[in-house]
Length: 64
Image (cartoon, rainbow, N blue to C red; front, side, top):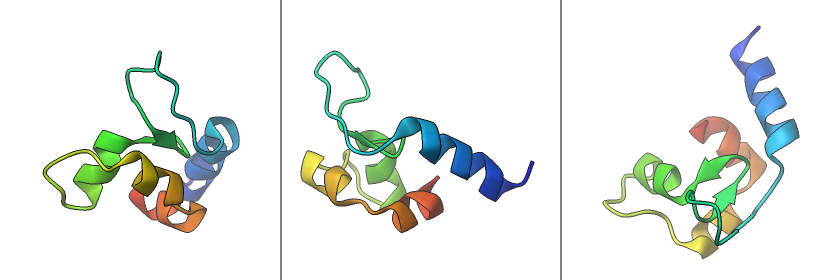
């Protein structure tokens, strides 16, 4: 499997934005949590729900 194939599979099953209060990952988009997205963006805190929701699939592919 190539990296692209793996990312395609993740994106297929993870879907888009969710913010389920019962999910300890908090706001998530394309399988990327707010904490991971914040770290990837060089922030010292998780990304905001709005930042996670605004993430596009091209960014998710790079951040994966």
